[in-house]
Figure 1 (cartoon, one colour):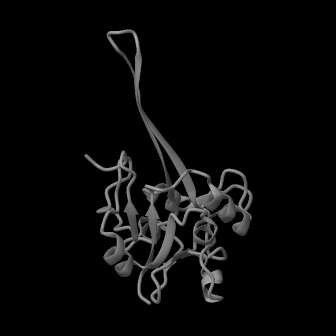
Figure 2 (cartoon, rainbow, N blue to C red):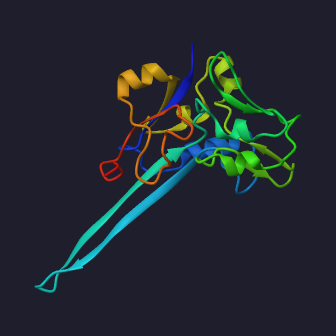
Figure 3 (spheres, rainbow, N blue to C red):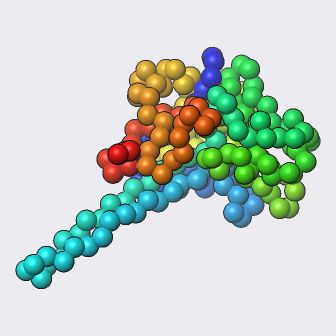
Length: 193
């Protein structure tokens, strides 16, 4: 199959957070731990018109993101115990809970907020692309749950051929840091300069 990745159609995401809730439910994560997050971006202001009217110049949109299973994962390089591995068959980055020492270096190294630290278990964990579901022929839970079909997954090269090469929108770190395996159709207000 080769490297797999996510496609996010931000232009149709309505911010319902179904992907976030389904991921939390499947992974039984504690409060505050979100392997998939949905961010709201709001900007703009209201402009007073000379005639006394108010013109709004407000923009808002949503963005769903999880681990990007990067080509050069910063979390993997930072792990002192070797608990983080990038699988050869599909490029999925995982954290072995038996080996993780909870140093949290992966948490601070990831520019996308992928690894999350669990204060109850004293270990870090993250999206593992629902490899257990994929092995049964099912889609990752975030993909299966999105009511608008704004999240897809598959071989990253196929996603890039189908949807383009945008990997960064306003507010995201440079893709040159880790080479994330993500493709984005940005919201009209989320495009870079």
